[in-house]
Image 1 (cartoon, helix red, strand yellow):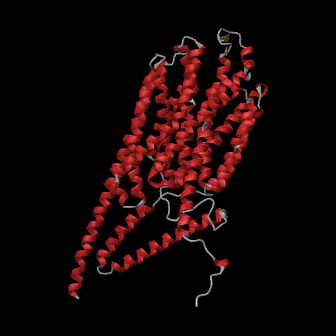
Image 2 (image 1 turned 180 degrees about the vertical axis):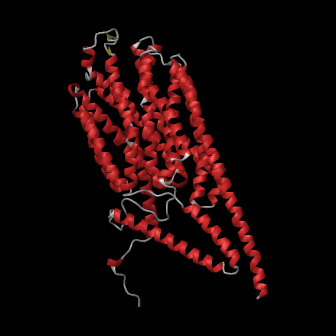
Length: 558
């Protein structure tokens, strides 16, 4: 006779299906909320031109204009003031912000690698909220407070981006697409200041707008606890990996750090035990021939060692891939920063001082930045599609090194396309025809999305995941030092060139062409690794053939 089922021990049916559904929904929620975070918070500093309009209305640095008595201080037809010293101060603010957004990436990346995602994000939320509160309570009398406010806003935004890039590891073959999409969202967030400008013109005060943004930090805190890991998201993603909130029966929330750590430790132990069993079975099967088995063991040992050996951070930093990628990033980043810094005087020159025309083209430039989120995924799609088409045999092998080599091969096309886009963008920027600048704006936002999305994707696939934060941060920090040349170029344009950047633009067309060194270096690096892998595979096959020949002879003697 069957005993009646105890209601207290009743369990949910189809438990495994529920867990899989829950994990799938959680991953997509993580992706969507991360996209929202990057669009509306991470890279707002690059919409600086729209915020400057508000700050001038509020009278920031107006005292510099009152103390300046020269021909450069005049009133335009639309009752706005044109003041060189005031413009220089706002340009200096943007230079400081753009420098901090890159230079601070290395310590932020180092911190991300060593203390994990949760602590890093809490620091980023604190810095970002501090920056928005400073702007909210700042006024024209204490305009110098904008310097630390902009710096905190920039560093906090970078921390949001860096902690979200690893979300791409959750989506396997779509990894590059997700990474580039997040970087495109980072670029599009520059349109947030344009939205603030519109709200300001409607009648909302700057203080109230930034107080609302500060209150939205609670959303970041909730997302950090529920939808992101405490440490890191590994790649390749282990089977059964989980993070964030957990589905434990009716109680959907449980102790995430402990479960995540236990999950990762269990995966590591299973992998180690599996490897030990394979090694023991391999040693027993190789007992037929002593000489052949010893050679085979050496060959297998070398192969396993080459697959599992992780390069040190120092060797990654001193590699040619690092330096050529730094060259690739720095040249094109400097080109974009200089274009943004000299956009206003260039438009003023082409429009013959017509303030209404300059304002129209400035708004057009700000609006085009919004479409960066739609441009960036194309770079990731190119990488992912080219990877599957050109490297299917390597991926089928299943090893991490095979995946990395396939990703590196797919990056060559992406890197080359990005440089070609930048050359076309530089050519259009050098043409002194005002309507052509609409096409220049389009090329600029496309190329900028490809640049930063490709940079993050290549850093993730070209170097070990355990060094991602440090490598990504070091690249951005060194490129930030080089980007300081933008202020020198800006002074050169405003001084000896009398506001005409035509010669600087022509010089950058030649300079950007130098960046082709990087995809060429990556191509030869991939070819060299392929040759080494084929040579090792040939040696292993030869040793196996020797072992098979010796095995029948030993059985015949018996």
